[in-house]
Length: 301
Image (cartoon, rainbow, N blue to C red; front, side, top):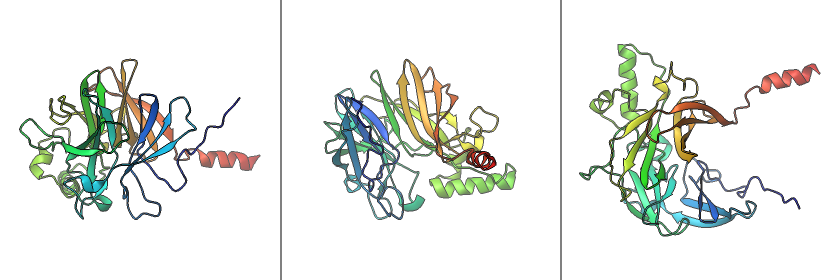
């Protein structure tokens, strides 16, 4: 007997972009942002999870709200949208939700912190746990703090994050100054912070965490350059923009991301979780590439 697979699996008035599917036990859970139908900006609603048994991906149910923005102590009028999250199971068996609380339409974004909530079950009621920080207690502040992804790699916890902007001002002295000013305003960084990063502050990054899921174990490092530094690399034309996601399959690490094209998901691979990623290709694109060629071919017939 053939059974229908429903697509879309969400109700037509439900919008969960930045979806991160994870299998915990015998169910698959979809974590993601939460847009409001008819909304005026991104991610206006609290995190909601849908799940289904692995054995039957037609039987989806809403698990309800798992975490509210107001639970975060940094919540305020200027900072109340929660962007693309990710969830991982820690060594203690609990589930850790990583997210960045941001502002409306890009205001109050990108300067962190990356925060964490915790729960005893994948789709239960999460509670605020803390912010990712150095051993000194200072919050993580290197690079652009956005769209976290996280992986438990046989007990080692890796956190990925970053963002990138297309800079087409030029590489001369005036162009560089304009670029720096734009980055100061968008990412709330000082000129000193921007200039001391030899690879720039934009791009995809990774940091290893201690078993407490909050404390930084290794200094953050760049794994994929930003759009502004991708020319001449194998990422040119498909450079990292946002939406970090990570998986390990057969001892190969797959880093998935939204590219500069804004309509495609791309991937990069490596034998290591924190270095040597090479561009792999486009997984999916909704940019209607080639549609005009197809239309002309049909018209000729």
